[in-house]
Picture 1: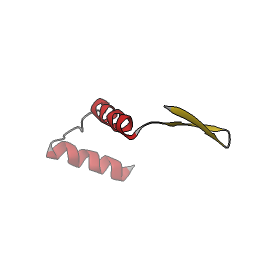
Picture 2 (picture 1 turned 30 degrees about the vertical axis):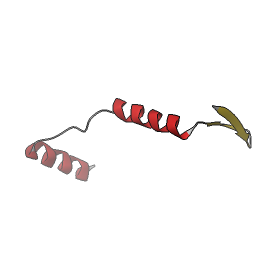
Picture 3 (picture 1 turned 45 degrees about the vertical axis):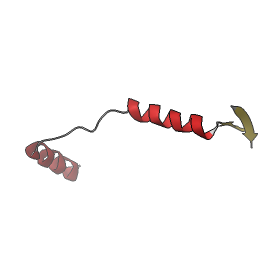
Picture 4 (picture 1 turned 45 degrees about the horizontal axis):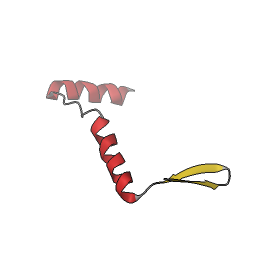
Length: 51
């Protein structure tokens, strides 16, 4: 892992294989999508439209 500075901003250079493993770990930590019943979805849709 190397650090690169461009215009006073620091960037980290990571090998592609390590980057891909980091992406997989990040995806695993994300919360699963919440499933709604038809009535709940309709209620949420109307709420968002009113907003």
